[in-house]
Image (cartoon, rainbow over all chains, first blue to last red; front, side, top):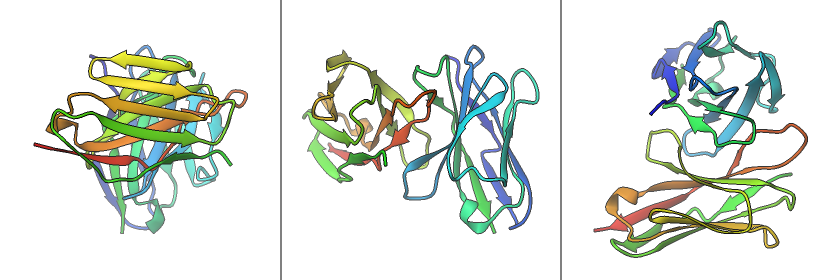
Amino acid sequence: EPEVTQTPSHQVTQMGQEVILRCVPISNHLYFYWYRQILGQKVEFLVSFYNNEISEKSEIFDDQFSVERPDGSNFTLKIRSTKLEDSAMYFCASSVTGDNEQFFGPGTRLTVL
Amino acid sequence: QKEVEQNSGPLSVPEGAIASLNCTYSDRVSQSFFWYRQYSGKSPELIMSIYSNGDKEDGRFTAQLNKASQYVSLLIRDSQPSDSATYLCAVRFSSGSARQLTFGSGTQLTVLP
């Protein structure tokens, strides 16, 4: 069964450094998403992406964040200058259309020191 | 503000019993509702989606939706210890092209052998 994959599974970085989290959505899916979950808290929406552009973003997704689909398979989330409060699990998800179920990848645990 | 509320639990049921998980949401025009299961340290795994009033059954799981009461529930029949997890209710609040999911804080379920 096709699934969303994410790399790396765990990323440790120093505050102020740039990180890139990578995702490969399910191949026939057209909508891609990033969510995050701070330890012990709710899953929070960051951004959705369709047709090579951002379709919506939350207040969390400020100028420090960007997303890109650099090729036909990868979908990336970049954090330009990480802060301690960026430490969280970051989940990529994808869906066939914007109205369908969203399937989540295994996540990347980001630890900012 | 659009909210999804769940009892955080923990909810404990004996093996073989029915577990009942509840969720309320704030926006009357919401269209799409999802239940995810999340094991500790793992990503949300889709269990069921429901879009119209009434019941939807899939194996041991039944989702129930009552839009007038802004209420969605998940019943797990013949609960097994492997069902022990946190169950997340997610709602897609309809607003133009919005596709993001808003999650509740989850209900922690423990099935006792």
